[in-house]
Amino acid sequence: MKITIVCDVLGKPNNGTTLAAYNLIGYLKEAGHDVTVVCADPDKADKEGFVVVPVKNFGPFNLILKANNVTLAKGDRKVLRRVMEGSDVVHILIPFWLGSAAVKVAQELKIPMTASFHAQAENFSAHVACMNSKLINHIIYSCFYRHVYRHVDCVHYPTEFIRGLFEREMKCALPCRVISNGVNDAFFLPREKKRLSEKFTILCLGRFSREKAQQVLIKAVAKSPLREDIKIYFAGSGPREKKLKKLAQRKKVDADFRFYSREELLDVMHGADLYVHTAIVEIEAIACLEAIVSGLVPIICNSPRSATKNFAVDERCLFRMGDSRDLAEKIAYFYRRDDRIEAYRARYEADRDRFRQQDCMRAMERMLEDVAHKKQ
View (cartoon, rainbow, N blue to C red):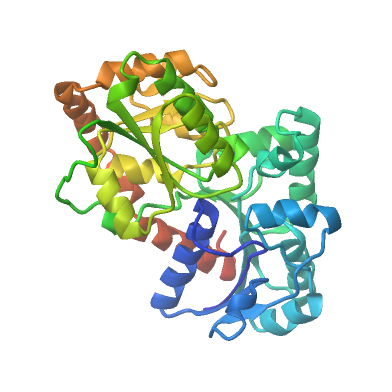
């Protein structure tokens, strides 16, 4: 098939959405499809299979975008028409300006369309101090629906959670498939466990941003009588890194902050004792799945705006949103108790295979094929 993938935000593979995009692009190319990616990343200009459109100017908001390492694309219809002409199917990864323009061009050219749901409203509203505004978040979802999702032949939801949330917001159901973004095979492979520290080590993965709420873990360890014997490894990058570092220093919490390559991350995952997922807004949290698949037992925030809580096997693996004392108690339950950790690890083992990335990408390929052939 000739497939055009339209991605308003691509950038470096340092977050779940971008990794999901690169994984799908790589899989489809390896499967023999003719794939062209339209994005706004200047560094892709000379790369085969990529077409670059101009960057959209947001005036004073450019500083916020820069702080988050985000480049947003202009909806350049001339470029889109040239690239999309003759395509069997168009897949839109983000429902922003470029995605919206792609919808209009695809309709003119009568090309079937699919679109993934990778962005929660709070991913926008968190950056303008409106994350908890139901009205603002509803308006954002309405824009997503009006400009992209209602027009496509099939919506890809990574989880039932986000499908249900969007359908409740819009009070309608769209043609869709629920397919996980999947976990790379590297995380399933056995690996030698090398302790990261003599201390009890906790791993926390995710962008350093408001909706990821890593400060709750720092405060939990600070309140714990075990504080002196706990070290946290924060894996990621983002605009709140300096604030989190200052908080850890002020609370006298031993914490390491850095971005890891995949190989480095695998070593950290196999060397840590426990995993804590603090995010309060999350569509799927592949980072948490990677930790689980690697053999780590998770303690997950029970936020009603996060799909990740559904990965918990029982209440011992959940903590109340924003409650650092409750999190401290959950950590204490597993602290230096290999028997408890092993028992929980065995419970997670039974469910890990359904998240294999190759199977998930094959399901995505079938969705694109079915829409292209009008089987959806």
